[in-house]
Length: 104
Image (cartoon, rainbow, N blue to C red; front, top):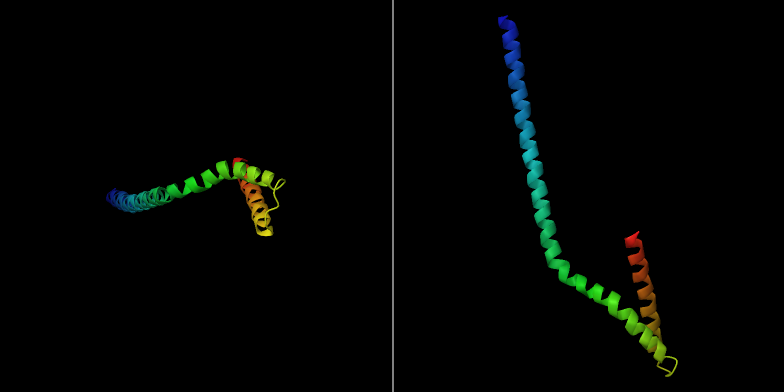
């Protein structure tokens, strides 16, 4: 009986030790997650003003581009202006494709 009690006692302390290690590991993981969340929040706060730039471009540039493209029918701009407008059209199409893919 005494031998059995000793084995049970030993098993108990082994389980206590395993539980302590487990709790320490959980605490480390929670600390790591908290630190990652703080870092993520920091960078979101830092870069959120930059989001207004593409948002403004998404709203304003296509409208302005249509207006500029329409004037090409009435005036013959320099080749560089035509090239720039064509490049802007291309960029707007890429933005539209990216937005469409983001919604899917």
